[in-house]
Image (cartoon, rainbow, N blue to C red):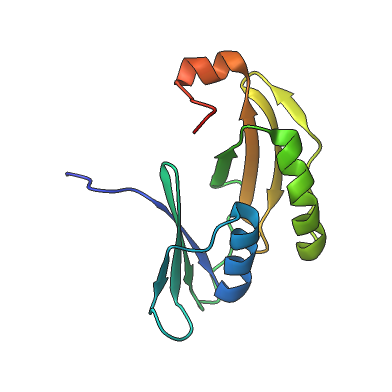
Length: 137
């Protein structure tokens, strides 16, 4: 098997809602929309090191599997990111966990409108160095 690309794809019964949510969270519009005209069935956000695809799935069994997968977003300034996240939390009625200090740094988590877990994480200096993370992007 030769893998040419890897990305995360999230199924949702309400693509417009989830697209608005991730656009607000990530601060960028999706770079891909299919079809290009009309109501999309797929959108894709391209981040450093990650392609995040969202697609419409109207199957009744489509729903988040809690704790199965987490979308982890490393940030340079977790406190600043939390300030930005406050408006989004209010608009989407999100419950954000208390700030946690772990061996790898500080983090909070919350769920998107479909129940998928998102972790905002600021690595500690030692962990960042160990994984070769460049905080400047």
